[in-house]
Length: 215
Image (cartoon, rainbow, N blue to C red):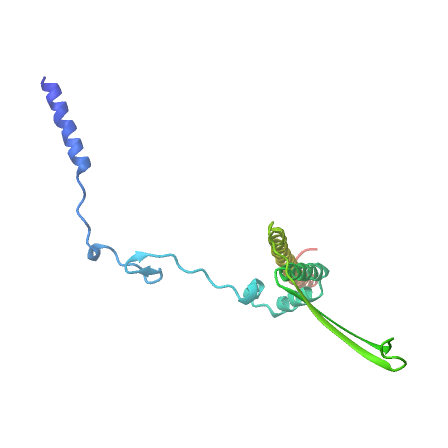
């Protein structure tokens, strides 16, 4: 009985400890937020990402005029970009044709005739004719709407393909350019090493001639 009583008291103490809440900590007791971090009323907020150059010109972040020139030349003369741009123009033209089918179609016609008629005898007469017609296709079965949706999706696909082609060319030019620059740095290091070895050789030969070092 005594053991069970102590167990019940211990269990009641655990429940009371679990239900209790710690006292609130005042904001004055919290450590100051460093000014280097973004804050809003003492609450953490996500800092805005750095803005890219306009029109997605990410390579200009390197600040290299030669890279800017190479990318601009590749963008202007690359066949893949020109083909993708031409296909995008075709898709947009098809979308305009499909969208035009929703609008009324007005047709005008005019003509003329000059000659003799039985009722006028040998006297030549001139007859002029003009007319107009209005037609409109009602999209009862949704055929025009489906064609318009398909054409719009094709335009979006062509736009994505053009953006992908541009990004691929830009990345290839930048990657090749930086690889070339790395080779230039390695070449300069090798040349400096060869020059240092040459200076050491001349110094050793001079000391050998003076008898300071053995052959």
